[in-house]
Image (cartoon, rainbow over all chains, first blue to last red; front, side, top):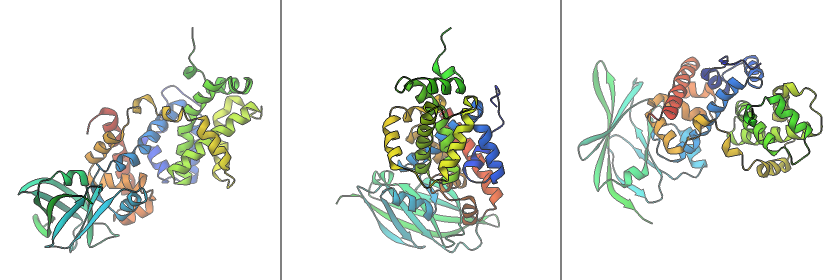
Length: 189
Length: 188
């Protein structure tokens, strides 16, 4: 029943519940309480609003970061224009970003060895503009996918974008691969 | 003292809908929807693994509830929440989800579906949530995206990220708490 200030169902419980982490018995207990307690229901409404806001936020194409094919596939299903570049170490490739592209996906290939964590550095005209540390995924052991907003890339001047992947080993950074995107401005069809 | 509709109990709402002629209880029906749709949607998200399916379920369950109230078929009005949960369970497992209901509900609740977010999150907008997602650590963001955008289940996420299921769970807890704090606090 509703009790003033009831906090029986916390945010972590709702997170587990919605993610399907709970047993059928545990889930049923949460459901029974939620449908009879307005205090916990308002917490559930807040959580519901938060997770419902995630897909529209991703569709703004402003989120970026390391992703997997599962995320790219959902973007594709939603009609997001993703321009993909498959880059092997040492690659120098023209960076063709069209006016209707929304997301750039860099498939950075390398021999990651036993590295679990990899740091990506992006330099534009010699200046580091982005540094991010991601994790090597089991589903794609020789590749990491990094996404960028195509709008951000389009506003760059004609310039080379250098991407370097490193892994920390024995206290030192080991370069896994360097890649060069030759940005020649936004392209129009 | 004037009592606003949002301060009456669930039971009073149910009694008014059950007792009023059709067309005279629009405010009560909207309030019932506002209160229970998020819970039914959450139930649908858990059991149907689909945002769209959860939205449909919430509309169908609340329409049926209102119909049953009007028909005098809900026996325990003081337990309307239990009735709605039972209806959610029944409809979630039913294959007979009629398009007619969906269309009727889309029209019926067209004016209220945008107003069900709690006031604390009413300012949720996509650019702000995107900024807060960007502010998460890479692994936190990826777990959130795989769970709530790519609709991947926990074992698959754990396998893909080379993590134990327990670690994914802890990361998800932390990420959602940070995302909520960022969105609600305006910090990114």
